[in-house]
Length: 256
Image 1 (cartoon, rainbow, N blue to C red):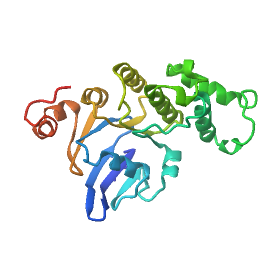
Image 2 (cartoon, rainbow, N blue to C red; image 1 turned 135 degrees about the horizontal axis):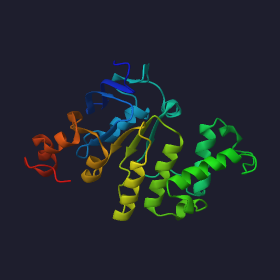
Image 3 (cartoon, rainbow, N blue to C red; image 1 turned 60 degrees about the horizontal axis):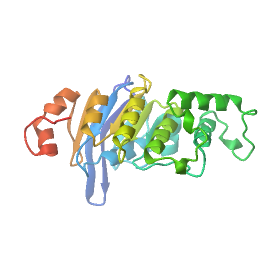
Image 4 (cartoon, rainbow, N blue to C red; image 1 turned 180 degrees about the vertical axis):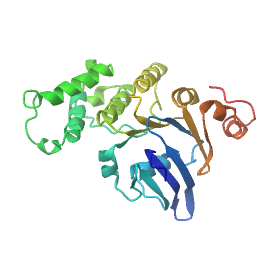
């Protein structure tokens, strides 16, 4: 384990009975890296995220967050300590407004989640409302402040989900297909939001749109049949013969 790394993954794997989803995955992640995770369906990308967040426990191997071995740590403790994710499908409170979704996250972040059953007005919790409004303004979502989440478009809901992840002030943010199912204009807006993420925030992103992920990432990891096929800079991965065979069936360079 290298002590100056924010995340050290040592030989982890995941099996379900005789089915081996991930096999001997090892890598080190530095603070502020932007890492793209790509690979064909079934390569183990989401399972990999589930192991990092504690939604699944590895069958073998170890995960270190800084110096701490978190291999068996539950997901809620990892999230509390700074490893936060978004999901392929929106995971919002659809009957509540955008501001209320955001305030619930900020309450938890500020250690006052236990007051959910009491009146939570702007007068009593001015700092919370100020912080929420600042985030909505910064991310260009203030106009949706009082909108009920279920009434928003899918793309708008995805934007809110990413905002909630950022509001927790994580050290590692895992984004699982943030632009899936979006129109081009919605996708463009999400990409703009991702470029605004703090530079010291470590981001790992699973994305099938190669143009997006190659543009955002400074490091690419290609998973294939549960193993790391290649781990390197985007310009190297883009020209790799094996990667191109996976995606387009030839040795030509990936077009993105």
